[in-house]
Image (cartoon, rainbow, N blue to C red; front, side, top):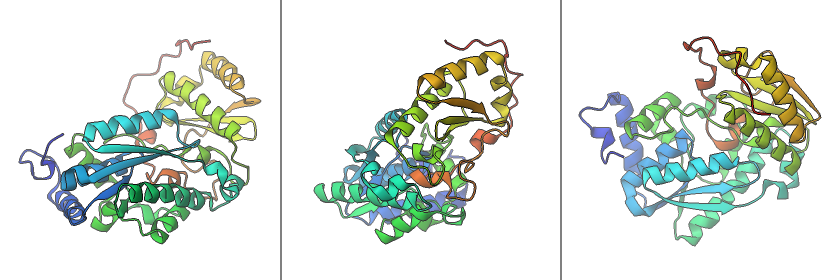
Length: 314
């Protein structure tokens, strides 16, 4: 990673964006030390990079491992922390210990974020660090019902990107300037966002969703969700990949694999993948990990027509 990406003469970063990022970095430099709530997504990765740039070894990234975090995302977080060169802590907790979270009402993300950030503060205290930062950016407060942001405010978490006025697009540009591999990574909301509001969040439901989505990822799909409607799997595929999902071979294979992991019925949503569809009147699904959902998974593709003769492992 470049040591001074914000001032690089050959950088493509817009001057205004570079100035905002420098403001965030300089504000972090005024702290004795910081712990960054780190999902490994682009927002928290940029905060971690800025903190590492500003404070060196006095910056620490921390990822909370729980049933709602896919194992692949934890692996990504470890890899990105190593890419940045920042010390990385992993703490374990369970949202399922909180009956308010399990009830899965409209405040689920508030309860989750309160517990998750509480573990961050406990870890920070153990390390002698007073400041906890998160990846909230300047676009997040205007994205509808976001109860998790209330937890951020109540716990006095510092949001460097928000305070510097960095939007999601600008955050991605800064990530690219730092050479981060997650600069274009679509955001990944936590697994509980696949369960409709009002239906209890259980380990069994989270597990079968994670296993089902792992299958789709291994088959090469990029924009997708598997929604759990009490045993009925509603598979959403990004519009530019939907034609491949209409292949009868896919239909047979996805039915076989998803019933194997615990679903009773498997359906394909013809409207395709879109955020918030599990509970259209509820909270944004991106609420769960502070990474606002981008448009990456929705963009039209210029690739050739998909190979409808593709075979899927049985």
